[in-house]
Amino acid sequence: MIVDVPDCLFCGIAAGQIPATIVLDGKRTLAFRDINPQAPTHVLVIPRDHYDDVAAVAEAGGGLLDELVSSARAVAEAEGVEDSGYRVVFNTGADGGQTVGHAHAHVLGGRPMTWPPG
Ligand code: 5GP
Ligand code: ZN
Image 1 (cartoon, helix red, strand yellow):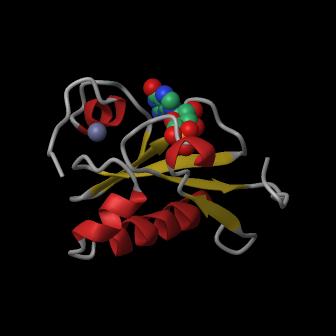
Image 2 (image 1 turned 60 degrees about the vertical axis):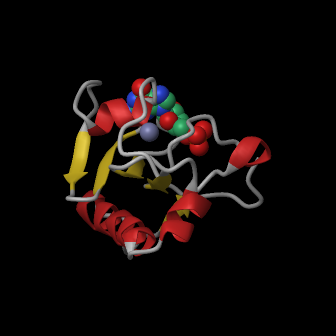
């Protein structure tokens, strides 16, 4: 883990250097709206510190992955989709569709999701 990676988009958002619409501001996590929303609710939850992907967050331990998932649930509650349902997605690696190399959970809701994903 490296606390702040130069040229990392989400490190820049966590540092407040790149603007984002913040939904929940936690000590170790930050939730903000996706710039290209795929559902009425589309929020990204990141660890403030840099980890390449969710596997690295899991490996680091210390309850950070629990906090990410708890923050995802808090986002769903704040957005009013906890009862209708929502999807939490960690795209991981190239085939997983990960395009930003700073771990993040997508929280998607406000419409029925389809399965399988594309
Ligand atoms: P991934 O493709 O890595 O799973 O997800 C990256 C997400 O970051 C995409 O859904 C994309 O729309 C979003 N994103 C990319 N650049 C920005 C940005 O500058 N600001 C915000 N808020 N979201 C971004
Ligand atoms: Zn980063």
